Length: 243
Image (tube, rainbow, N blue to C red; front, side):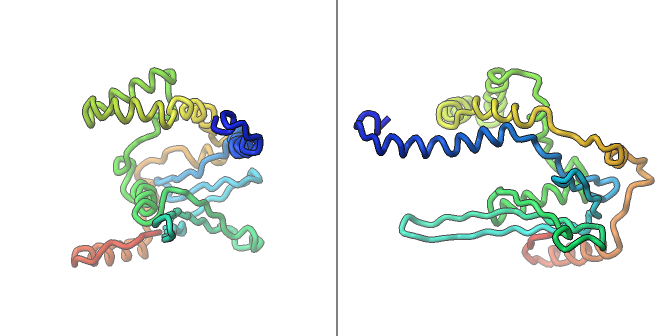
């Protein structure tokens, strides 16, 4: 708009380039098939890791590792902090070539406590149970339209923080600043319905087991948990955990 009003052709083309590049990336991502999810099976204490090649690994849960990284920078414009959570899986095949011995994913959820909290959700689900983690999967199974979902979200927010803040933040800012309706359109196009496994082996692996057949913690993990709980009881600060 500024370039148009000032009749500056260079600024106009520069603005077009700045807008067009992320738009092309977004459209490409929306039209790229959604990859299969990494599936955590707490009854078997295993993780199914799908690969781009169509193959998959069944990894013991207790071999999964997590690293929370954070980087802080200070400059003339002030300080900033960025971070990620990395979750690593080792190939269960000991004869695999070096390039296929490990697989990892990075989640841009922030560093420090944010990354550790994200990992704690995964760990709590596997070690405690699904009731230990808030179920936010309803957004991937929406039966109402975009506008109805937006209004329902405002009503739900009003029950938590009152109508004034709900209308101000979840109503006005969410719509006119963050364009939540367009975000909902993109999310539905990309994630509804969620992709699922079609391999009969993984379908069978994902089926529920009788409680008496559930896998148990290894003695090594039980001992490590006992030591850590004793440290916490003595007042030692929590530290990042992994299994």
